[in-house]
Length: 209
Image 1: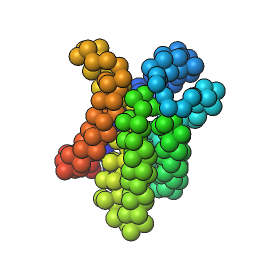
Image 2: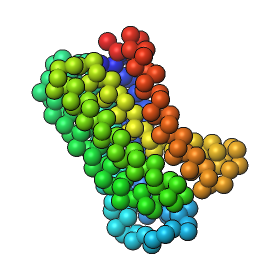
Image 3: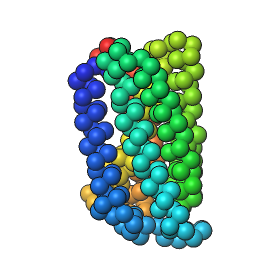
Image 4: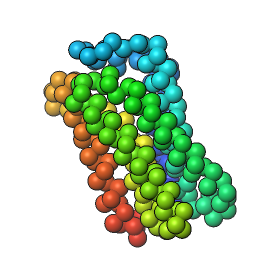
């Protein structure tokens, strides 16, 4: 499990991001007008009411995955509420699959076209695969490898955050056009979220207890 300071910091980032996502998608721009405005030259038309409903499910379940994931990194919960830890883990497991299913629907409409939809679809395979591996190791009672693979999988809860940070940097700071900036954001975020958790796992003595 994560050390207290690490857990508190990650929890702070997680809940701050959830508040932002919920506000932006359900209060500030519930019709996703600003985001949809960048989707040009699509190969197929977007059925906006359907797309929006799928997007709402995607956002809500992604937030659920973030909450259940961070809770299960708590040693307090693990030690005192073992059954809850297990059930919560399965909720996270199902949440990831739902997030990837809804992402699979939206991927063909991704800003940037096929060059962007391909990495999204690959992620929709890799991320659930990581959760399955984590589940496999806990069934084998290998808690260390289970924990490490859960950290790798949890990192992808922040895919959207990293995409928008990189896109913002490339578009607003470096002056790259939005479409190219978004493509850079997608590839950059997936690359970073594949590498960073593995680097953290190597520092397990300072990260975990």
